[in-house]
Image 1 (cartoon, rainbow, N blue to C red):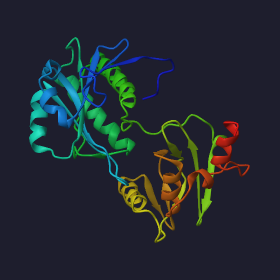
Image 2 (cartoon, rainbow, N blue to C red):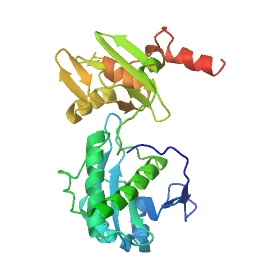
Image 3 (tube, rainbow, N blue to C red):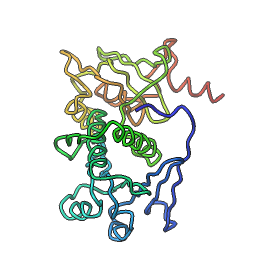
Length: 286
């Protein structure tokens, strides 16, 4: 889903006054409401009346070095009974976010639709490992209901990045390739661009297959994960990046592609040979 063409506001209220505690999330002109909390506060959060509503929820665990986050998407009517089960049976999750409707207009079919769409989006984006197994089937909704729930989903997808959850949409870059930075070495060539979210490697870039002995362990692990999820595809003597993909930093992107430790700020260069470091220094007037 595309980003909005105009500004919007998101209100985050923290009842306890603790920044890492329960957060209540509301967006302008939206009937939805989100509750985000760490698992350590589940016993307190489970008392909230919002969890008795029908809704969709996400459980996740941030990935360790070289690993993608693990995510589970679910739905409940209400949500609390499902969270109670997961508190007993699912060990991996450390955080949760629940989305319900303040006017309680979501029904069971609506949240089943949201669960299916969000699980499919996460699978397609390949930015996390899905704990759901198979993507849930879409329920049958009327044309009007489908439009309403798609609108509700669009607002969820706008709120999630504000909460630091960038797992449900593929990387999209609007700049032209003339702005791309280039990485060459060890028989591969890649293109990428530095963005506010991270360093984006362009689809069609290539990566080495053979790692050097000195590669950082987390990069080697991340390479295995990206091959497993289909981000890096076997293309004979090299891997090919199958979709635009966001890395945490230019150095991680360069290291994964080159199969060795790399300083991304000096390895990525523009068409005139200026490194990313030089470009940033010139832009900042250094």
